[in-house]
Image 1 (cartoon, rainbow, N blue to C red):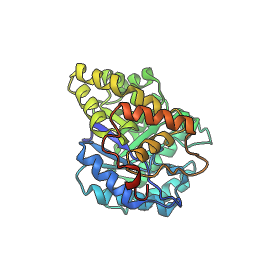
Image 2 (cartoon, helix red, strand yellow):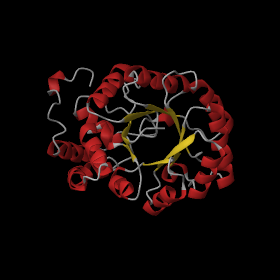
Image 3 (tube, rainbow, N blue to C red):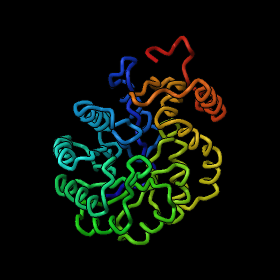
Length: 307
């Protein structure tokens, strides 16, 4: 896997009736690529993959791949807490031409042991081989942490397990991964607010939430750090760090979709059990987005069309 830099964990835009807004999704993908983003992730946590049915999930991946048209790599999220179901979904994903890697999070709810996670991810790797697999460690959502030693076992057991998105929020764990795994194995930060610290200890990039709203700026921050231009990287982090925090004032992707709605790029519709941010949070988000210049090109209220 040659991918490095900043990738966007794309939101899944919905119409007012809750159906997928393919036009908004295609426009979002094109804007991201035109803004210089390095890769895209479809149907991750920010994409509300847990609330998509199988047909919708597969369609979102297809739309992102078709729209990207090879201009940037596309990772497809494929996660389930039943290994048997995961393998069936992965077999479906193999039929989508143009997917560059499979991103799969820890099995949620079951709280599996390290051995259980090892067997789960190894089975996935064998099912999609030779497609690359990116492990996704996000214990805050899944109640299961993937230990660095287990990641090393997986990298040794399956050559197509080539990377990890580390979103534990634990910088020492990410540092251990960088030092423990082979040099060719890629470690990505899954936390915007730890991106520069992660790159400082050896991560090769970021899978970002905030780049949904500011792809050019977050992408420049990550690439500056990777090229050891730390003054520029720190200046960008200083400016957009407030956005990194704001995106989690309420459950992700509620705040992100609110700002994208204010920008005229998508509705703010989320699917239950998520609910839109409160009026107070929305007002705070609007003030912040205005201060950061994110609303500069937003359409006037009467020109919002569907949004």
